Length: 455
Image (tube, rainbow, N blue to C red; front, side, top):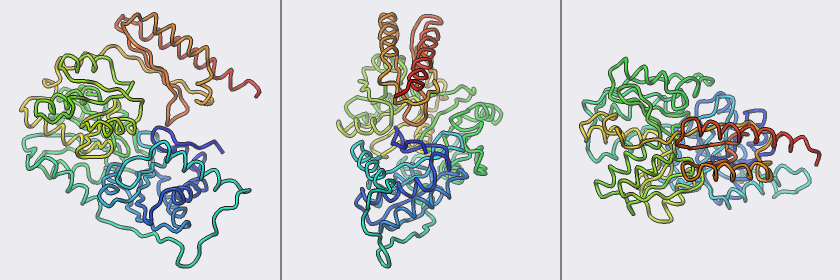
């Protein structure tokens, strides 16, 4: 069994191979022992393995005396919203944008925020004890000590009602939207959110069969959405991912709008309305240099964090800020939510377009001039080998120096997949591709050699 650990967004792996029901049951027990709570909310996305792993984590929680409220298929941000509303911890079975064969376990503390690093470390330490046959755990509970598991329906409607209240009475009449739910957790409710506010909605990617989540649809592949927007003469298209915690958009011409552009648009809109706290927006190291230049031109401060919406949220809360996000489309509107929420982001985007009376493409014209960016994902035997790969880090320093201020290099281990991400931005034609290619080849060579070296 592969070693399990928390990445940037929970614990992930191939369902029933790396993320086995035995492991997830043990993780549920570890969470119940570590997080002080009598009741946990548990939900999932539409993956075939979802019911299997949801049952396992619920059994683990109940075996340690915790009661479980099974909310069924719901978007991750809906679980976070319920967690905040009821002040209960929550667990989501989802691998977000990953292929259907993968799955994951995301844990939210009571209040709807993802666990901090110390809390995750405590859970993982307890997990190791649960899995160690030599370690004697607490006395097994019996009788009334065993937790209950009950199903609670109707929570999606509560979440939709909350979403449609955030516009303070404003409506979306006159807008035609195409919404792609990625055959994921928002499939049954995404259209209703926008229709309730008067938008004309064409819903696609809303027929999950357990295996088609994120497959040729949603934020991982916006080609079908782009064609649908043009075909239906829509004002914009909204692309969710499998658990609906991120959103990308498509304008009326079928052009993709990424998280950097969306974040820039929202930052300017909030600033104009006096709602951008600290006149600051929070981004990660992967955010394009063009975004930073655009914000500088508008007098908006940019604060940078490591990759992961948990880090963005921590920076927002530390300084009382209102807006932050990632290029991938994880955007956090802190006055409204505790995590990225694709449905909320889409709603606020439609509101910006409706209030302005201008097409999305026109609103974005000239706003962010992207510096050419190349991202290469290198499959590696183990991302843990990266820290000790001195030749790789020396090469990163050399390449960065060679760019002489006209670009930048970001190289990091993925927190959700066994890959090293090599990102290069550079203004010269073909420069970013060349630098990224050299570094990717070196990463592949050095880490495979390290993995093959005994000891």
